[in-house]
Image 1 (cartoon, rainbow, N blue to C red):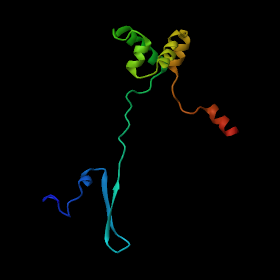
Image 2 (cartoon, one colour):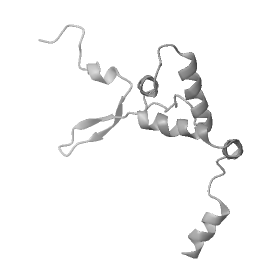
Image 3 (cartoon, helix red, strand yellow):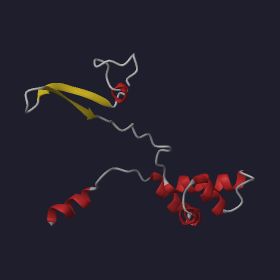
Image 4 (cartoon, rainbow, N blue to C red):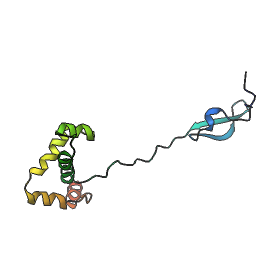
Amino acid sequence: MLATHCTNSDPAWWQAFPVYQTIDTRPTRRGHAGRRIVFQWTPPAVVPDRVYTSPLLEARRYANILLSDPFVKTQADLARDLGVSRVRITQVMSLLRLAPEIKDQLLRLTDRGPSASSARTASAR
């Protein structure tokens, strides 16, 4: 038994959600007016939690957390808190042991896209 407030002109309960859209009526093979309901979903915009930084700046941030946070005592604790692997923490922290000149060079690097040398190699193939 249908509820008294539901009529044939009312849309189905699931059509009230914005992901469903009624497409125009088209005649069916038997000549009746048919309606197609299509699921239309657009994924939400991807917003990164953190913008990519230099691995050296990431290492400095990890070192600051290790020194300042009393609940993070080891690199394993840090990895667990940040949601990365312990190996990744170790690899990034090893950058802090580089010579100061190399660290300065790493900080000056920028992502310029494909370089001219890589374009030359691709055209030579």
